[in-house]
Image (cartoon, rainbow, N blue to C red):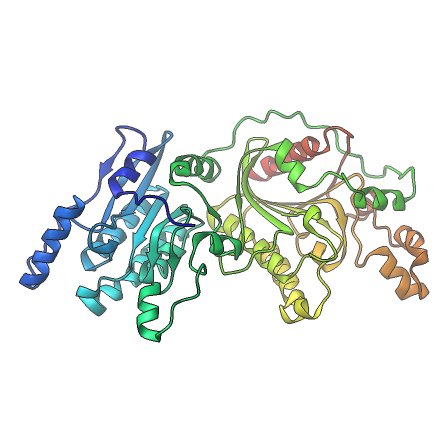
Amino acid sequence: MSASRRWTARELIDLVLDEGSYESWDTEVDISGHAEAYQAELRAAAEKAGTDESVLTGRGTVRGRPVAFVVNEFRFLAGSIGVAAAARIAAAVRRATAEGLPVLASTSSGGTRMQEGTRAFVQMIEISRALMEHRAARLPYLVHLRHPTTGGVFASWGSLGHVTVAEPGALVGFLGPKVFEALNGRPFPEGVQLAENLAAKGVIDAVIRVEDLPALVDHALGVLVDPPGERSLERRTPVEAGTALDHPVWDDIAVTRAEGRVGVRDLLRYGAAGTLRLKGTDEGERDDTVLIALTRLDGQPCVLVGQDRSRQTPSTPMGPGALREARRGMKLAEELGLPLVTVIDTPGAELSQEAEEGAIAGEIARCIATLVTMTVPTVSVILGEGCGGGALALLPARTVLATERGWLSPLPPEGASVIVHGEPSKAAEMAAQQKVGALDLLAAGDVHGVVPEQADDTAETLARAVTAEIAARLS
């Protein structure tokens, strides 16, 4: 797939920012200290691009929300970053931090400006420092990668976003393919540095048309900066502690394993709004058995990390990469100061050589360790199957809820039966003996509330219960 037409920086600003809201933060660039030949090159670049440097910075509003922006102009020396451009970027980010504004960056660059050499190269560190100060202030940073984005730009401020998307067909990579071929005498493998491939590999979150960028920014900032809205769903009375189960717990296990059982996608579909899915670890792994989303559950902004049982099959079990994705979601919530909601629904983590060598046990431990040290409100929900260490990885929130038919067990009941009885036929007996059901968990104090299930609105009922707990924690 080839990239679409190349957007100029001013065209992008006009597209994304509300009409009349643009305010430039740029000051005049002094080129007098450069050699005469380079000064002439800079003047020619400015005339060609219609900008005084390879980046424009400033502020505006996107659908009414204030935002700071940094936008590359590729027509100015291939969008390359010299000392002046780097200083402009860092200054804009620090001003945004001081004013409490989210930053939107849109890149299109060949990387460091070779005419300025090492001095320009090391400025990527200062840009990164400013961005990490911005993130430490719990302010959002959104990145939009345009065609092409390579070199030092991708290896610094192009790869530090909380949310990162790219335009279709964009060339995005560490080393430009022409330079690679010249240095190595062979072409770089085709398709590796395409935006679509990076999204599939979990390096970036999504590929979207440039025309859809305003809507994406609107969705993201709707969760990241807007206050909680009015709750529209009426909360049902939770199941009282001490309520006796009127059927074998094995019936609940069978229900949670059945096709059509309510899952995390139903929770987002019927109990949430303004959802923006994030995909992958942003470090080169993607496992769709865990879902990460910025969303508003019944008006409450949060980060949701959920095990998607519909994607967990014998051929696609929940592996260590999925738990690394989960930790990305936890880190996002903590860094952005948003409540975290984890949804447990798994037949168990992957059991294989690949999982062992991929540190499945360590990832379970690190998920638990991350959750128990978070400072933002956390709510976990046992939605259905809660099996083994894979379930435990998302369990230890400050508030733990379970649906009426949810359950939690150290092994599948069949596995427990094998250990105790030598064969799996005593699974139902083991489930009862181990007290895996939601009402037993409530009686033991292992969950704090049990959410009643309704055939037609379990997802909505669950959303009400979760947001009530978050509101209580925030009050």
